[in-house]
Image 1 (tube, rainbow, N blue to C red):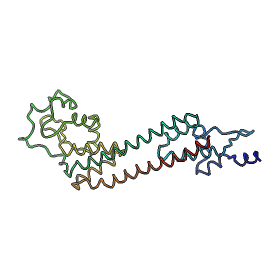
Image 2: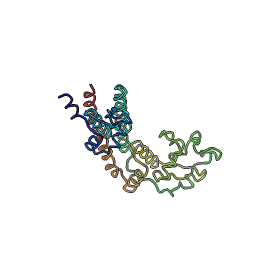
Image 3: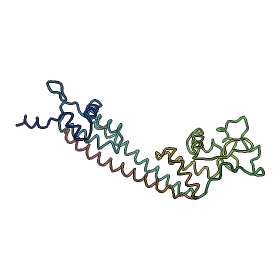
Length: 269
């Protein structure tokens, strides 16, 4: 009787694959990666799986949406190597990242509340000659733009070095954002250096927060353009709503992954 039950429990690679919408090659790859326990072999060398392997596959596929493929694979590999504490550490790191992402979203929302509805000036706008900074207040021509902070920025704006330092990024990043249309600094008429006025600083802060939230430059540029054209931040509400939804989906996926992993751990004993 026991032999009959064991026979009934055996699964071919194709059985395991079809039950989860995968190819047999994917199942073999998962086994080789340590995501599944090692399979038994028949006398002719064919792989045979059991319900335990099916549970491992269910756990892995449930972990992927919340933790990503690489982390989910590492979690399963650790469990199958009896390094359960390492698996728990990886899970904790994912939860910590999710919490950090939530805090980033809150920071973006807070930044938006503080930004106001000021529209950025046209990039061709330059200060009137009468209000241009005196040569004594402008960086020396021999000084690199990124080193101009020591001399102090003009009263009409901030140079690239101090702004980059405030945001915790490199000046080259601001230049990349400028090429992508995220910021539009004017040029100091005396030195030719970039000068960021209040609206430019607002756009740079907004771009920085959205980049931290995982948005690509080609998605951020239209948002900032809409803010400028509309004279307000309402166009970002849909993006923030989508961001919140994705964070909630990840949190729920982590719960589902935890339930499937717990079931697999119980099956392993």
